[in-house]
Length: 88
Image (cartoon, rainbow, N blue to C red; front, side, top):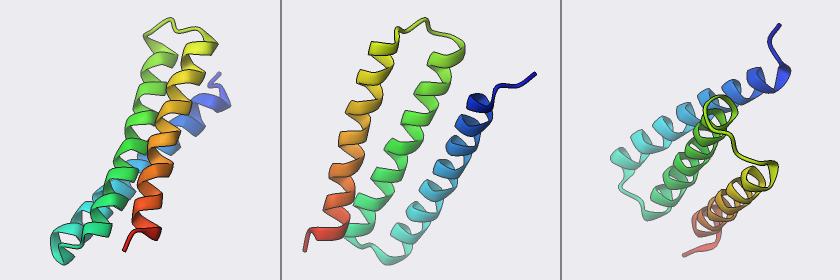
């Protein structure tokens, strides 16, 4: 039986990758600095999902280490979204 966490994490990874690709394609077309922030934020979000998937199956991280990794990447993502929305 497949745990719901695995399915949700896989869906999150795929969705983040799709959003990253769309943002990079838009960046190549528009050459806007704010789109670079958006593409980077989605890329880090994909990296976070990928690292959590790897830690779920391969690494033996404690819950504290997973929380630290996830929280650190969340701060990076929020900073990049700030750069996308409020930086002029």
